Image (cartoon, rainbow, N blue to C red; front, top):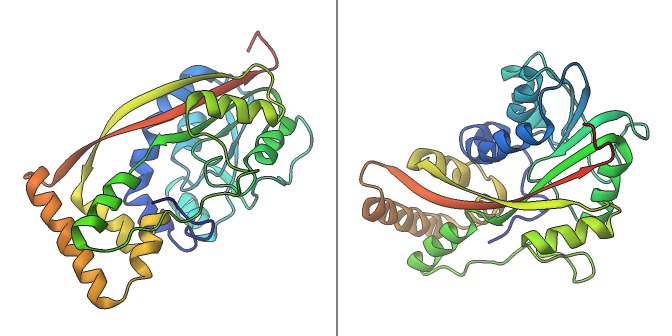
Length: 261
């Protein structure tokens, strides 16, 4: 079950209560790749509710953030008032060529309609380095299982046309980035466990976050009740303490223009 392009509208608070913690799972890796900021400039593209941007700022980077969705920006401004976050989206950022020392896009290129054009835009705005992540294993399988338990037809949803899509593996990500102009991207897999509270998982679907949330909100009242019963049964079976341990895998890519960075 993959998100549709329009499945993020108005979900800022629900995202902050759910998947913001999950997506932070790559944060330490991205920060280690770029190192301390020392006052250098960084652009966080698709910054969501601002957690990663705030972490980079704490590392000494002068951070700007771009986020196209109004409710995400509102949450970011409330929780991270020191971060400058403005409207902007790939593949047409409102920034000059090579405007920043580094650019970050955490779980963004798996959502855009033209990943290669988006990758080229990231390369355009950085002077020295770009880092980006995509999902290899996301929570989609969990919601597909919930649908199967509920007797509902899960939708694949949101797949890109064949000429825009790419293989969601480390090698496939590297090939796509090279098509987008990244020279010699280094791509590794990052694996971690998200100990997900059942309340956070349910907040994501009830709040309409990503593909599963958009799917749930599109159901009628009877099917929503079936979906919730199936979710509750899964939690009762696998998470007696109401915390479900979920394995996730991301591909993490870095391109360096300046080897001294």
